[in-house]
Structures are given as structure tokens and as C-alpha cells.
Image 1: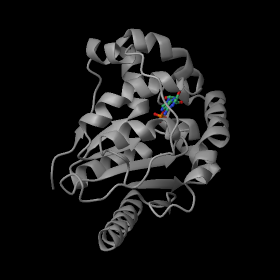
Image 2 (image 1 turned 180 degrees about the vertical axis):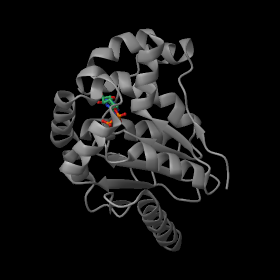
Image 3 (image 1 turned 30 degrees about the vertical axis):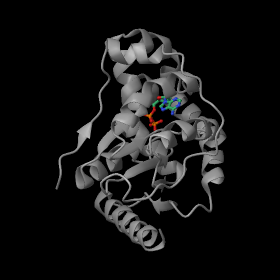
Length: 232
Ligand code: ADP
């Protein structure tokens, strides 16, 4: 097993990146690159509602395959905690369960994603069709486009139960949870529809023991990788 790493914000440097004036351009959405393009590493996306287990499964996949785990939510929370200029800008969005404006999130993620072009698991981004479209041209230019998108499907009642049990802080109160689930329905479900039918996206039932879900994801990734290898 190779070591996993978790990207953490680089203080002033990360903030300079956020002010770099990067403007997302139009695009066709993330697409499936060749598995072997960059030293056989994987570039994975985890999509799921709040509480679906994106963080847990991203961590397990990162460990299993030696990938860098990049979580937009963790990075944003770290900025808020460290009271960086970016953190002060996004605090009210995160606390209220609203989406942080695309430009801020994209500027924050561009550097870690490109730095980990040889292998990453991206957790929490893209969250909207706009983010998916806007990020496509950037990552493609670096041969860093996603190879598989994994949708973790968990029933609403179970999501609410997990989020209340987790009680992470200001964004895990009952009212904010309701709002975040609504934001997910309004913004992220259209993303799943947008990706639907692409051979590199699959849904797994996330309402099972963690190990079972993990092994299911690994099996699906391996199947996809061998399929892609045999057709490319
Ligand atoms: P969860 O999946 O439990 O909602 P995350 O840790 O992924 O939690 O995200 C926490 C918060 O960070 C979101 O409610 C939102 O405010 C912000 N956020 C994370 N990722 C994005 C993104 N891609 N676009 C906009 N806002 C984001």
C-alpha cells in the first residue's frame, strides 16, 4: 500500500492563488482521460449529499491507491479556522450551508489539483454543472482530467441521522442540515443528471457498512480501469 496524503492550504501562498484573477471559461465538463497517461495513477471524484460518506471513502481510496485526498470542504473549513483572508470571505457561506462562489472555490483548488495530476481523489468538487464545465478546460490542458466519478447514494433519513450524530459545528445544526440537503437537491442532482450515461460515472449504495461500500467502489473502479485499458 502506498502512502496517502491530504492536501492542506499553504497559508499566504494559497491566498495569493485565490487572488490570481483566474476566471473559469466554458467547457464540456470533466471527461475520462486514459488510465495509463500519468504513471498508472488514478484521478477520482466522489459525489454525494452531505453525510453520504464522501470524506470517509475518499480517505480510504487515497490510502488504498496512494492518492492525494483533496477535499473542498476541509480546505474551506481550514481557511475559516485559520482566519485567512479567504476564510473570512467564505465563512458566512460555509456556516449557512450555502455554496461558496465558484470563482473562489476554483481558485483555491486549481493548484492542489494540478499538483496532484498524477493521482488524486477529489471530494466535494465539482458540486454544480457550472463548476464541472468551468474546470474541464483547465484540468484537460494538464492531462489531469478525472477518470472515474463515484456517486455515493444514501437515503435522506439516513443522511439526516448521520449529520445530527456528527455534529461537526456551525454547519451541522438541524436548520442548516435541511438547507444543505436542499442546496444539494437544487445544485448537485443536476450535476448527476449531466454526468448520467457517461461510462466513467457510477453509483454505489452508500447505506451499507463502510468496508462493504469501499470494496464495492474498488471493484467498480478496477472493472472500469480494465474496460478502459482494453478499449484505448
Ligand atoms: P458536506 O458534503 O457534508 O456538505 P463539505 O465538507 O463537502 O460538506 O462542504 C462544506 C461546505 O463547504 C458546503 O456546505 C459549502 O458551503 C462549501 N463547499 C464545499 N465544496 C464546495 C464547492 N465545490 N462549491 C461551493 N461550495 C463548496
